[in-house]
Image 1: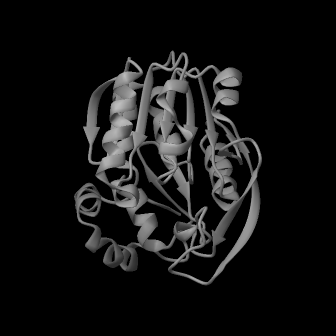
Image 2: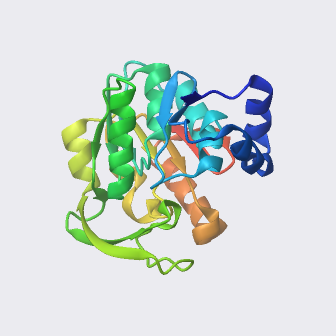
Image 3: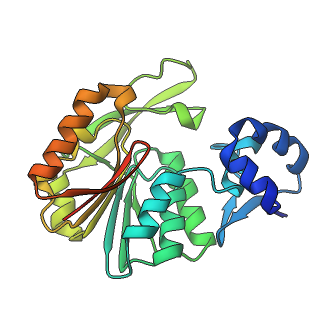
Length: 247
């Protein structure tokens, strides 16, 4: 059975996170195998979500800021490269809404990649996903936690249930040369200052990026914004910590 929340509960669950646990108890049963929102069916997978997260998906609450900017500024002529695509939630919504010319995702977490591939296939979305992270082209350590949300490139501080794995990385210039993106869509949890220099985005006209002041402070955020401006971009929009730069 696919969960579709009634409109009133969808609105409430989207804007009030505290209600989601109660809604999960009410709506989630062993018969629920997926949820639906905005034309996308999200399969339930206990490796990466619980009932509360499934309710959040059914309400359109996850990645809402990034998705809204993508739907406004990305169009069918664009070639999108997405770094840190996670479970593919934003990618699926974006692709369904605007169907870009080509769409390439990069994600480090193997469990997330597995879920995203299933999500894209289930919904008939032509999105390519590659289990690599931005870096210098060598392999790097990744800490895959049992609780998907806690996985990180640094040893998790809030759980002892994780395993260290090696994942390949890819240089930004290689991606730019091979994929020829017009759009970069990025949420790499604080590594953007190191691995996504605006000066290296030849041919890219649009960047939708989540910055992380909680991880590196407002000074680094301002430095990143200044680098985008110096590279010829203008800040067209901001939603919380997600920015859209255009040139």
